[in-house]
Amino acid sequence: MVNEENSDNVAVTALRGVGPRVAERLAALGIESLQDLLFHLPLRYQDRTHLRAIGSLRPGQEAVVCGEIQIAQVHYGRRRSLVCIIHDGTGSMSLRFFYFSQSQQKRLARGERIVCFGEVRRGPKGLELVHPDYRLLDEAEEVSVEDHLTPIYPTTEGLNQTNWRRLTDQALARLDTDATLRDYVPDDILAEHGFTPLPESLRAVHRPPPGSDPECPESLTGLGRRRLAFDELLARHLSLRLLRQRLDADASPPMRGDGHLRRRFIAKLPFSLTGAQRRVIDEICTDLEKSHPMQRLVQGDVGSGKTVVAAAGVLQAIEAGFQVALMAPTELLAEQHLGNFRAWFGPLEIPLAWLSGKLTARARETAMTSVASGQPMLVVGTHALFQEKVDFPNLGLVVVDEQHRFGVHQRLALRDKGQRIGRQPHQLIMT
Image (cartoon, rainbow, N blue to C red; front, side, top):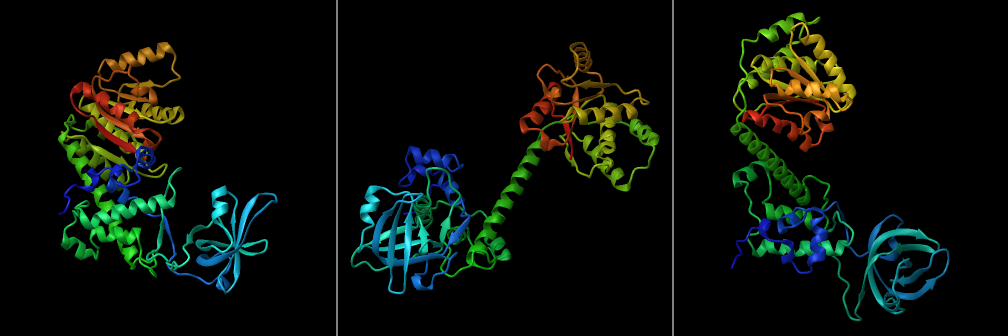
């Protein structure tokens, strides 16, 4: 019988070995469900699929070796260490442990057979492995190696690689018995791009077969990673589409006018606008006439004329009878904007207000009173613009410069000030 419970609804606590403490450590990495665990992908891989003869080893190799412990003793030098000399018939090497317990010292005794994995180093008396992964073998036990490349996962304190492999083993096993992971990509899309099904892709990434090259794009693991990358990009694209739909469903004040302020502004500029600047201005002004919020990014190098383009949009909003807030991350940048707009808007007799943390109490009160009047104007400032005491009764457009310097909550706080008119203000971002 197949369990129809979806993996994003199955908590990691359903897996063996996941109690409250382990669940808390997983949650610190954003892993709370089985699906989260399946998409926690390895950083790299180790090849533990071949047993190597000690006599063939070279420094710098990662290798699985098996031998009999001939000597096990504690060395007291600059650092106390437990050193075991093992021999496999082709040569000898040392296993060195700087951190060890008494029980570990007792188990690693002369005559015991041991299989271990680690990076081969050149030690004081020949080749050695420092703190290798190891397992003691029973007297008649056959030596076995892994049947897949060993994944190394991003981790946190308290979770070692053995923990990760045990947990992902359980999660991958559930792919065979449960409907834990739905593949939403249609078969014809998978075939068109040469993608493998999602469960198969996850297995190839978590447990690459022996001899495969995970870095090769055409290997099973490479194809699996391509499929997962496709899913990630698809999810991002769909989330942006959903966000756009929600924004389109919101109402914003349409800003229509005859464009006389914009034409006067452009005519007084001491330079001619480029074709690209004129095109972007037309696009912004067209968006501002719509009844859903504009979310437009103007990107360009320093000196490329982004501020002139933004000024044209500001004039359309003011001409339509709305207030505009222009926010910059620093006093210096905000003052530069204030100087530019005073020079441009002064001849047009457009009111400006200045709000920053450096204003005197009287100047600040005067500016806030002007803004609270609701008259169409441009308000230039820094973080002071989105403080609770600043009242925008008629905010129609928000212009943000260097948006990456502001937190999401700061930008949303300024946008939410437009709710006084019952609609979302348009937003123009310069970067």
